[in-house]
Length: 201
Image 1 (cartoon, helix red, strand yellow):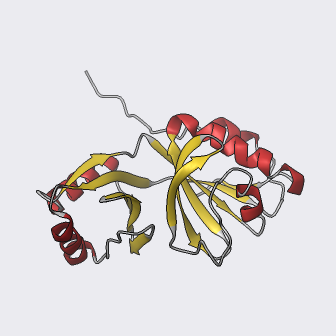
Image 2 (cartoon, rainbow, N blue to C red; image 1 turned 90 degrees about the vertical axis):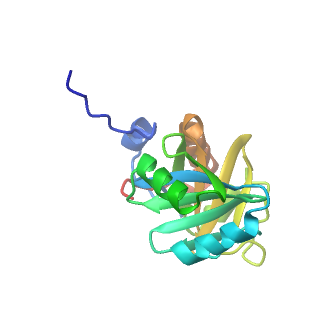
């Protein structure tokens, strides 16, 4: 029996189609085309893992709430001895296997590509909108580009980091919460107008 092609879906197709592309000082975008994998250091292997990642990927793993990026590969702090690895333009299972081979014996790796959705929130009003549900001080003197956090947003678990000083943030949420998170941002931005949407990557 011939195999049928399977096309991944974000779960946001309907809300993307309904958006009317108005401006509010906030831009929303679905970030697709990224492979995601959870990386957890094995017992007593943290220092060796840091060295291996530096040698192979040119990334300096941080023990604090930061995001390390080198070209198409990024590792975002996710807790003590834990990171979320991202590969732009990579296939999820293949990315997982590549990481497993590179970090063999030093870390446990599990593909998260189909379980998570990445939503980008940016614009001059982004901080004002996010402050309504993010229980973290996002003032630029406290939370800057490269900083990351794991928290709840309007009672939804979220992992996020600041990309640049625009400001631009990227949030990773469980796929089942993607629509709820998207709609929360839209509703939170209502006093400024309807957010604009970039449907590309």
